[in-house]
Length: 350
Image (cartoon, rainbow, N blue to C red; front, side, top):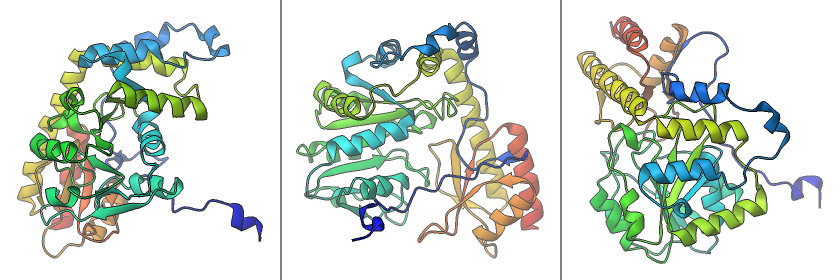
């Protein structure tokens, strides 16, 4: 027996690069615009003396605002430190059986990390040649199901009809639909929580609400599931979100006008960028997210384009993984940033 025998070892999640120098950063799917002006106003009005006190462990103001915005009960809402914290807590709470949890082979790469950390058995199911889910793969015994919709890094969205078939045919296990990018072009599964008590729908403020630096995530589900989540949370860390984050999150969720404005701008820029990439010979499946998962034209390797863009101060994401090493994930930035991207790509493609 040695020291190493008592240490938990896992292959960690690898986040996108966070360069220190000034670059065009299109590699981590952040929002290119600032948060709602209401967030700034709220933070400027805070009583900083309250930082000496613990925050509200139930995050009442935030969860009530989220519930009101989406038309659900506060008891159907759970919040945490970004959707990663929420998802991690869901894995810890709901996936405790001996049967394997199932998720796609190409998806958010944190899923297999959490299963390894928490010693959860799991199996992946291959997406088809168009990066879509095969329904039959999820109509089998399992200990839980996780589906990102729209998916990352592919950007593809599944139909609500397909998702409901999966949910209703797996009533003995919890089905998690991770909707980090849903606001950019997919249909939400949220209404289904009133119909199915085995469904959890996860959201984040990091993308469409421009709050990645504040770390606010939340999920919806049957009241019993949310209670189980809180029971585990209070057994691990009662005070997850801090006082400024709770106040800022409330301000962000309540400014619907600004939210719609920046989402609309990102979608418009995405569509323009897709058209420009097509002219350059890039191919891609339609995106329902704030990024494009594109394959360079014939004769150019994705890894080569990735490095040449980086040399020009433009960071995109390259995954050296089976089935997707021929593509680049390009976050949608401002119009000026995307114009510069296209300009450099024109030089690269000749």
